[in-house]
Image (cartoon, rainbow over all chains, first blue to last red; front, side):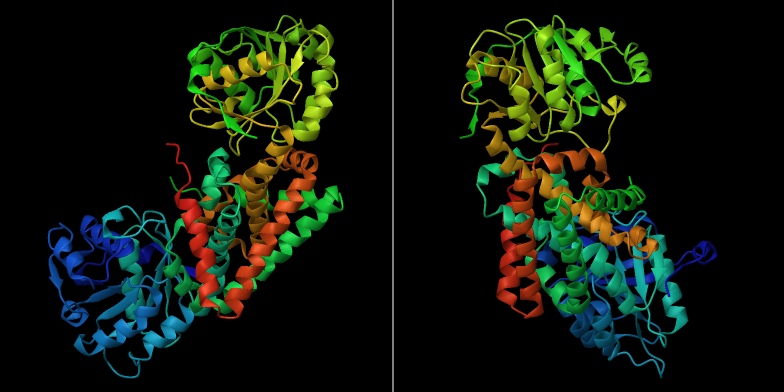
Length: 301
Length: 301
């Protein structure tokens, strides 16, 4: 079950000697910038797939070294954070595994965890000393992408899931929890599959709800778009996210997303019926249930 | 058909001698504050239903006089803006009608227009001189309510529908268009029924999409709420709107809302099928259609 980590755990700060970021986009750049800002890493080493990005990264203050391969960037790392699209995370973890020292920790920032952590962990057996894989998922980001969009404050007050299996070495989990806490996250540890059920509802479903709303409106007169008020803009903001990244996320979390989507369709059908049948009590009950839930949501400035 | 009003029309500023606001909440207070700030009214007179609110209003700088009845507040008005819940607008318009001078304009800020404008206009025949009813709907507001939440800047850059019938005197429409433009709105005139089809899609449907998402999540573990990232908060913000106000709006625009809701359900079902059938091309097509639409939405700072 999920458990918020105690304050005592965070009292001992973590300082990673070498932090390696693979494929820094918005999230990876923000991890590096926050680690630098909050003193959570002494040395930050980076690999990016595209040479032109590597040339850019060399000039940035949060980047101490840029390597041309993931293997070279991972060498000597105490903590590797893989920020690639979800389908590339397990292959990258397997590729760098032989170049890591015992006790090195590999994590990721992928939006799905169950299958991904099982695949990634396959290369990191826990029955002998060696590097360790533990999944992470900081609930931060935006519809923007690219390292240029990163900020050191991205994680302040955000939830971060850390998702060990039962046999993951506790010391590695603890170090990772301290790392994310140092970056400003409120860390919660849970089983990877439980993570997937939750984010299917609180992240993947909202994305689909917004995407379908926009896809529907795309078929209407294009002038309608600019007649809308701020409500539509907020409701649909996430639909600007990268479709290919999202396709990968939805594929990896298909079963949980389909279940959440079906529940949402049932809720909409109940509302449709209440409105069509002039069932005032039921209509009001749905709106009030929604408002009561929303009014208690945590607001981060 | 809809037509954006020409810049030339706005070059002649409108100054209303007496502006009367009936039932000022967030919107009515903002109309008064903006009218004062931008010099669109010389004298602002107000009626509120509750005596304790009237006592508060007397002390506010945007309020020159407070009356105990709508009829008394309407007397002498050049422009009356009715800001009551949609079901109360036509009765209020009919009640104040005998107390208005020829040429006085009555409008509202209701989120529905077709049936409402027909009912309200019934008391304002256009075949003889008298006061005139013309509907308005500024696409501004928030999930907050009450006059305390009002701001003079609420209308800056927002769309405002003005919805005359074919026989509405053009001079009254023109004055009303100038008034909203003076408050900062981008005004668009169209038939009340066309308005209802558009806002069913760009305002009422997004509200229902958010409300159902929250109603669904209300049935889950309450800890999930605070594990979400900023996406869920934005996607669901409007669900905090007043359920009773929204029930009124949905009732008034039932047919258009049901049509829009059904189209949304169809879109979600298409996405469900694409994901379930591993139809990658279709899944990506929906996400890309949504993103393309959202990326072109107007952003107001």
